[in-house]
Image 1 (cartoon, rainbow, N blue to C red):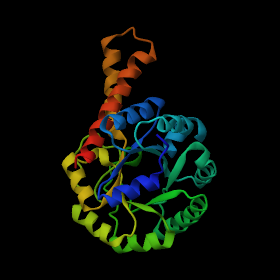
Image 2: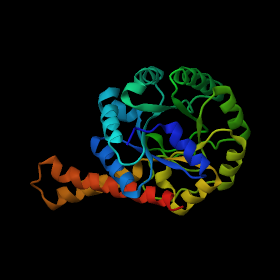
Image 3: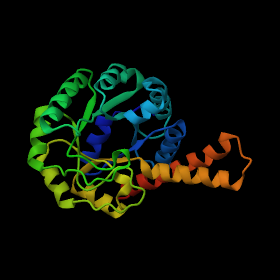
Image 4: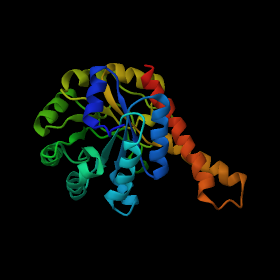
Length: 283
């Protein structure tokens, strides 16, 4: 299967009034497990590597992204690669410069922590640079809670401000704050579904939901029906991954071969990715 582009997958989701799931990659096992899960459900998907994940790998963009490219390129379903939550403008520019050789087709410029004017300025600048290389660009307006372990409620995205933001920055997709939060380990988030619908009516680009691991599956379906077109998932994978490692090590105090506990962890990622993908395929 040829490596897909994020723009094409999101556009197809918009045409079908569905959504595409973007799964966070931290390790090689994540990427392999996610793609196996997508293959199991027959759904397309996105492998996304965040700034934090790149920093975990020593700040080197190429090794983890190139590995994702090879895994995605050999997948039996359409898989794209996305750089997520990039706040460091130097890293953003490096990502843009290296994107296409590494198989990356999109980037999220994360300047939502800045005030509105500075968010617009930084986002517009990087968007213009990314568009010169034909990358699809996502940004965030309103702060989605949960980064660095803090489950702050964040600032909800205003529809009129969001419409103006898209015009001023030229972004292709917008992550909105509607009640979800990053890093939630239980599905207890309450989304403002009416706000999603108002945002979808006001904003001329596809909407993105971050912090989706904390959203109940029936609410995720309704969020898609109201206008969400890209769904980001990370923590849900890590919960299963870590649980399997804990179980493997608890079962054998003498276990030292990482393959013996990482293989079950990878399987947990596969199962989670397959279940979430099937949820949207059947919705």
